[in-house]
Length: 318
Ligand SMILES: Nc1ncnc2c1ncn2[C@@H]1O[C@H](COP(=O)(O)OP(=O)(O)OP(=O)(O)O)[C@@H](O)[C@H]1O
Ligand SMILES: [Mg+2]
Image (cartoon, rainbow, N blue to C red; front, side, top):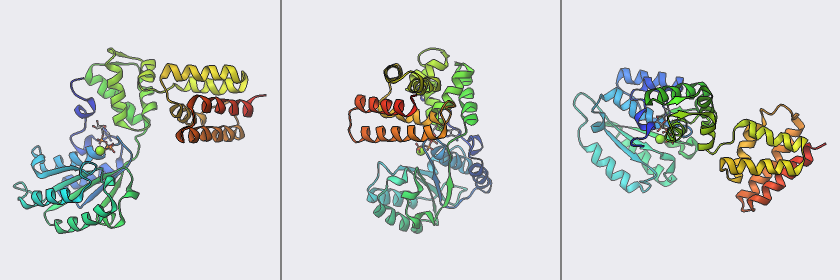
């Protein structure tokens, strides 16, 4: 793995960003007018926030955009003093010829303490003549109102499965990977709309051989395929505790899952199970939630999972 594929295939222009239609349309308009207000990008991991910030800077300033961009990661620089010093230094020098402002990209801004954010809003005002801020965060609720009101806020969403499919197929093609159609679907399924996770899963699977299959994807991503999870529920319903328990252990071993992973994956699949009615699903959900909570609180995994299987068998058994 000489280079990470997520970096190599990161779109360079805002028009290359997948999905996020509403966001991309507006960013394109900024790129055309070559100016923009302070921006805030909020949304889950791997959906294109950092990509969008860099791409916008490139679209506006051209290939040498780096000299007009100060990139800071708020999780490394939680102390506001270091941010203030850096911003001051950066803002002092003139913008690139032909441009009127510089860009300060503060990645993972939700890692800043409320105090630091309070001070940041002063900085944003002080330098607004010559600098535009782009903040990115996973949770906009962790950013104080005063900062949000200074920014145009953009919300990034998990990508639809078909967009993820498009991207991994494209990357596989460019990297010369033979990717089965079912394997591509499996990647889209396990990535939950996180494109970074999708591309990384592809690279990991491809590092084991040039031909990527569905099984390989599930094994290398520590995800049990839907039919295995459905099989566990079915065993609880039809076969009773011991066989269900054996199935559960088999899944844990084969896919290398921790107890909480298994519970979360079962939870995710439950909606698609056709052989249980609504009331049964309510009970199963409660049993899974209980097991998850107890494991997180430190309850022994093996006992808690057995107890969950026992509960589910009692709920579903005849
Ligand atoms: N919308 C997208 N279109 C195309 N590629 C994307 C998109 N989102 C993510 N990617 C791919 O995933 C990688 C990671 O994306 P990015 O760094 O933009 O995520 P992020 O939203 O900033 O996540 P985090 O919250 O974890 O910082 C990119 O290098 C790119 O390859
Ligand atoms: Mg990011």
